[in-house]
Image 1 (cartoon, rainbow, N blue to C red):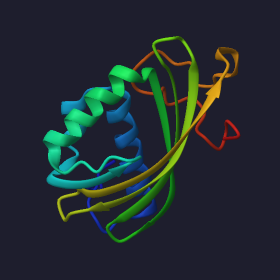
Image 2: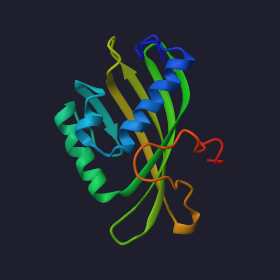
Image 3: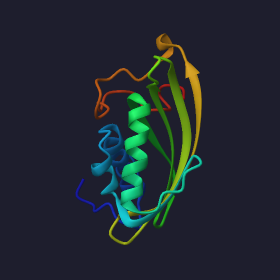
Image 4: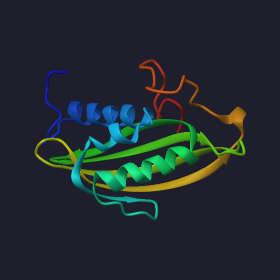
Length: 154
């Protein structure tokens, strides 16, 4: 991709931006993920409202200590100007071995440099059996040939 991933977004750049976000989150590296956000980014994540990179790192550190073997897929839903909406699902298990599939939607707003300045996430968790998992790639980036949410019927 030679087009910069800054607003205003095209369909191509919005899809690429969603995939870059997915790749970052699948790294499970809070510091790396925080760099995609403005230093004063505002979030709503479940019942938490972090502000700025320091609080984002703290939230993600707690999240990935609790959500083990985390694997995420994001899919573009809509875009306009400096806004992108995605839907997502991720699978993880807790320390007792109970697996979950978490479903959600995110609304994103970007600054002129392409950093996310506002993120609003709504997320629901559904317990699943291990044999019902659909995300089976090795931890890290989802392989390009792994189906997305629509292909998986999610």
